[in-house]
Length: 136
Image (tube, rainbow, N blue to C red):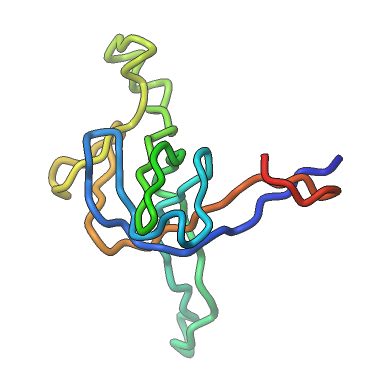
C-alpha cells in the first residue's frame, strides 16, 4: 500500500479560538473530516533581479494543525507543530507545553508562537491509501 497526501480544500483562517486552536472558513460541506491536516502558508514571490520578471512562487509552511472539530461551514484545528527543541530546552518546558501557540498580534510572535490573522490562506490535506482511495 502506498500512502498519498491529497488536497481536500483551500480555505482561509477565520478566528483564533484559543492559543492552540484556529478556525477556518471551510468545513464538512467542503469535504473536511476529523484528523485532516491544516497548513497555514506564506507565499513568497520569486523575482528575477535583472528583468524583474516574476519567476514563480514558493509556499512556506508557517503552522500545522489537525482538524478536531467539523461543522458544515467551518472547522477548528489544533496546533501540532512543536517549539524547536533548543527553545524548550532553554525554557525547561514540560512536554505538554511544547506546542507552538497562535498569537493575534505580530509583535507577540516568537520562535514559540506564530502570528495569524483572519483571511490568511490555508490548505487542508488528507493521507489516503493509493490502492483503495480510502482516507486514513
